[in-house]
Image 1 (cartoon, rainbow, N blue to C red):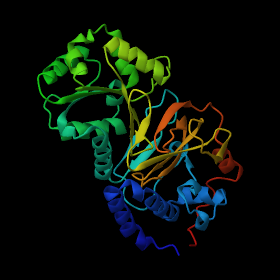
Image 2: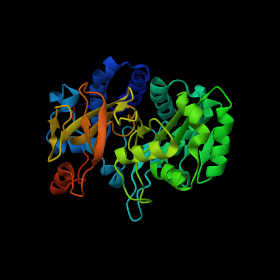
Image 3: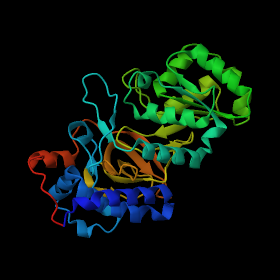
Image 4: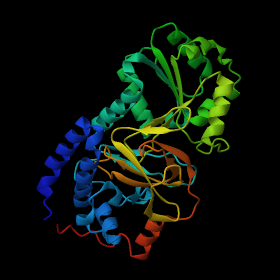
Length: 358
């Protein structure tokens, strides 16, 4: 039976498991978190019930229903009764309703983000970090700015910092960093990096660092209405050629997720330890794509989302690699609604949020 007294100890135990988890623990933790989320998130429980899914039949992560990401725009997606300290909010474009992701435990988010980055790239203390995030810095609710601010502090570098459009200052700071033994990480929103190139900068100043493998230039994707949308391959080819780089790295994250995935120049993303990706058929959100290389809609299990919803149906298209773990992001759905959302409208979504009976 539903027992509100069980919520807090269960939440704390799940967080301990996530922070200490190994890859082999993922499915067992995800299945336990599915039961926890169904029990203590009325929005997710109602969605699962509308799909007529018997939770006792969910024996594998492929059986778990995924909440449409649009609901972060229209509903409060919250599991349990922890106080919300603040919200991460998406930027979107003019006239769009932003997504809001409640944050109850920012330290947990920081711990997971740091672990994910360091497992792929090494300790933050080995880097000077330069964040070229013009539109994001203009918002105090950006999850990316929050993460990068924490990373900069953890690097203990007096040179690291944020930059809007101060390209000359950015170059001066990078030149100072080149005099040290640390690696250099430039994290930029895609249009910010393209604008930097358009400023006429001569990037030969970092050629030695590029040749030595000391430099990471990473794009976060998206033009946010600032420039014409380009596919990732075109962006990477242009930046590599213009900046004298051998490769461009990428980060895959969003307001609705607390975990990140990182990719090399080939565009193949490796998800963080708390994240897994599945694909669904483009025309049917309830049928899975299991063949490597086939295009499908990206569904994400993010165990760091314990206080919101760990099971997210995104609007992105992708394909899986042969290992069933790594993935590519290939584009976005068109403007047609996901069938899951239509189902909720047809059945009077939001009219009842009864407590669970088991």
